[in-house]
Length: 276
Image 1: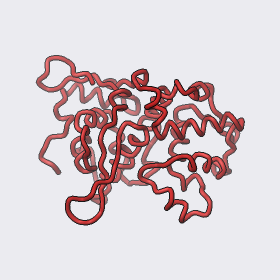
Image 2 (image 1 turned 45 degrees about the horizontal axis):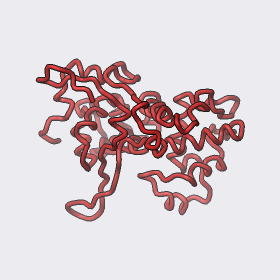
Image 3 (image 1 turned 90 degrees about the vertical axis):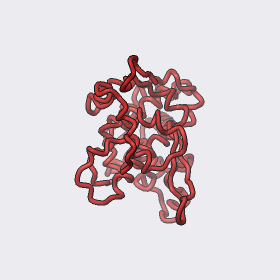
């Protein structure tokens, strides 16, 4: 553990509380501002690309027929998988070990489909996924920032991300995503490693009974950093380790974070609100 206080320790108690409440919903101190996001920037976000492909396909086919297990059919999975690259997942490696690509093999496609359903943009009816009225409206290119905002809210406040990574740590750190987002906005302007971002941005005191020491960093990547990268608000890269062999993941904020997310918080020692 670092001796440097986390970023959120500099917030007034009422601001910290407002970034935590209400549970399971967008926090009081956070606003999504898609009208500030340039259309081109939203259209380049990976999850927006994948979501538009799925929505367009659902409209063109009159619905996406699901398998008996409730997954997308292989032909529909391939339609998105073939046109997208997901940081953190090697497409060539996936193709090398799978003769056919099921939805479980295409993690990004599965993740996007679940987010679209959680956002109410795809709706299941009698084993068929159909684009909702709102989903069809968000297909227009100029609606891409609004689609990004819907996906962003769904991923962090309507989906249980533990369902995807099978990490035994429950809810953490998703249950304080508002705190993490604000902390990232003030600390992650330069390239930073996972451990440093976890120490600076999460509430480590809420961790209990961790079975293995690597599980918190795993949760930080799978439930925070990687989804934020797929949503276009973080950038990621591999950096050579300073000691030893290999590479580590590093992340920094992209301009879209400040464009999409606004905060109203008071800093300790400040007389006026610090708005970001």
